[in-house]
Length: 221
Image (cartoon, rainbow, N blue to C red; front, side, top):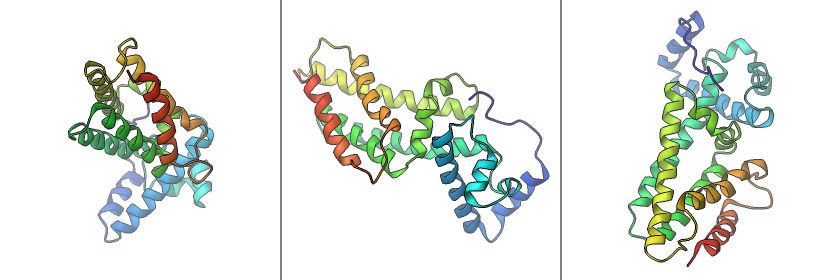
């Protein structure tokens, strides 16, 4: 995933794209752009980022490759925009949950619910990020990668903090390291990218109930 940010000089298409964004039809432009991002996320999920091409995305929306450049700068921009909003929204919600007057375990349950609900509502955007290996993103030097890494680590640190609080309060067992417990919890949730599809057998709510039972029963004092 390295090298996703282009540093080439602005092209004529790039200038026309900026003009289109300033035009009276701005809402139409943004609607089309959001649709392209949605379709791109689906293609990335099916084929993987590296294997997917702009031609694949253009074919899926019934357009030619050149026309896509009026809306986005390239494949890397489509990928970044597909996940940026979801990650930021999830972190903002987790920060809100952290401030609630609830027990640590109830806050953790709300975090599990938030993640799974987000994966369902933003399918397949968030799964693209997970599928493409968040560890690879952490090794990149682009501003986008640094932003994603910072937000992901903050998310993880909040979860570990709440597990530690539950242990200190005697609510969770103390023979399992908080970091390991957090990895186990995220492992359950994030592995759903391999099999969960909204509208099929299970809903995000049902997954939350099941995953929380597995985690809580394993961690409770």
